Amino acid sequence: MTRSRLLLLACAFATVLAGPARAQRLGQLGVVPAGTPPELERVGVTEHLDQAIPLDVPFRDPTGRAVTLRQYWRGDRPVVLTFAYHSCAVICNMVLNGVGAGLSGVGWTIGKEYDVVTISIDPDETPENTAKKRDRLLADYKRPEARDGWHFLTGDKASIDRVASAAGFEYRRDEDQKNFAHPSVVMITKPNGQLARYLYGLEFPAADLKLGLLEASEGRSISTVEQLILYCYHYDPKGRKYVLVATRVMRVGGGLTATVLFGTLGLLWARERRKGGLLGSATTKDALTPDQVT
Image (cartoon, rainbow, N blue to C red):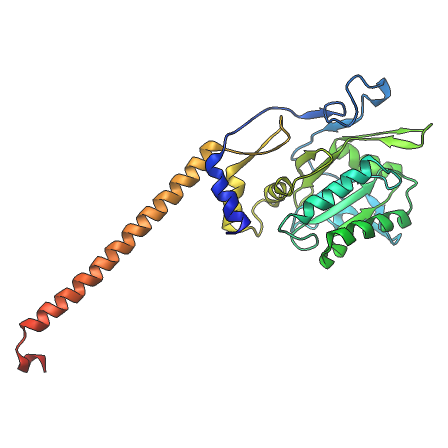
């Protein structure tokens, strides 16, 4: 039995959770404790769902070539967006490794069904650093197509801040320590650059990433089974994860039951008609005289 079918069967045991949360502060995300110093209070995420990030912003790829975000949001597939800086040995490393591990479990492949863009929040980041980090993550991902689909970008502070602000990603630089305070979050965007979903934490389950990508794809090139799976799930902003929706599950279950029932009745009816036709032919043949039969 395939994973998709198992997910559909799991719909039968669902309950729904809901909540209206929109803004997530750093203390709430578990990255730093509540009651942090005032300079960290502006570190966190303010969700800008359905708003678009600017696509004309200039950056550089790992070869040092000048690019814009529009080259990666081409309008045909969703894009996973992350912010990091590659001299960070703790949070950034854990987030990117968590993203890579989670995406490894997604049936879709980076560079085929979706892209990933990682923007460094350090304006002093070198393309060499981004290339090293990219190579390590792609080695763990183990799919050759991803080399053309996971994009690591560097840029000046104006470019970084413009995209971070549009995405609601709030970070601060500690000039004394020469590092950055930032939230732990992954954003999934629609093919046109609109923000579709925020996922929080240091680990990102493959199921949540897949559902986020299905949601962001807006029905582009997804199978009927994937559409049913997406219909059965709803994102719970309080729990910051996808949950099964009982009422939708019941509708899907009822529809499937009706389809199976009427399909079975149709087969039985067709079988009886064939039997009746054969019986009628045999009776007519028996009633004929030998001369009529020949």
